[in-house]
Length: 178
Image (cartoon, rainbow, N blue to C red):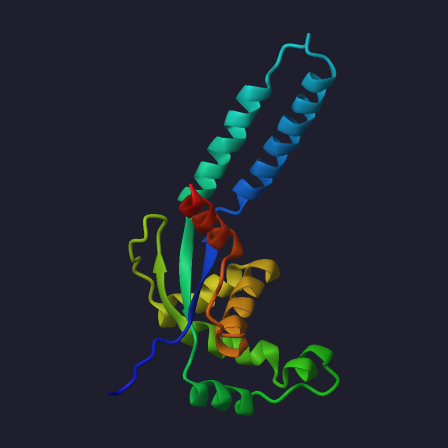
């Protein structure tokens, strides 16, 4: 019997409308302030529910403008070739800790690892990695790009143990006892 494997995958959520983050932070701050005031004095006209709805609406808008990138691990030989071709930079502590030039390796590894892009409903989106990734990556913040770096590291260098959810296990045990 021949064994076949599927290389590990992970997902990177990517909101296409970054302005919504600032809107959400402002709305949530306004909600929290109003909530604190209403807890302090119940006689105040309570706008808390309306502000909570505003926060929820912004969260829904963020979800609607978010796509999921599926990042798949590479074959071991392909990853090792990349590492060999991207030696650590002299005097760079991050490169030294990973054993390769993180910046140059990731410019090649991330697009090679993108296996697909899906919308919120799980439908596959047309995304030509070769034609579109570089421009998209150039427009990202360091924080957004780092999500892709970490995902790429996770599927290629991370631990691949069978996951175990203690909370799911406990819930099943609790429901089995009733």
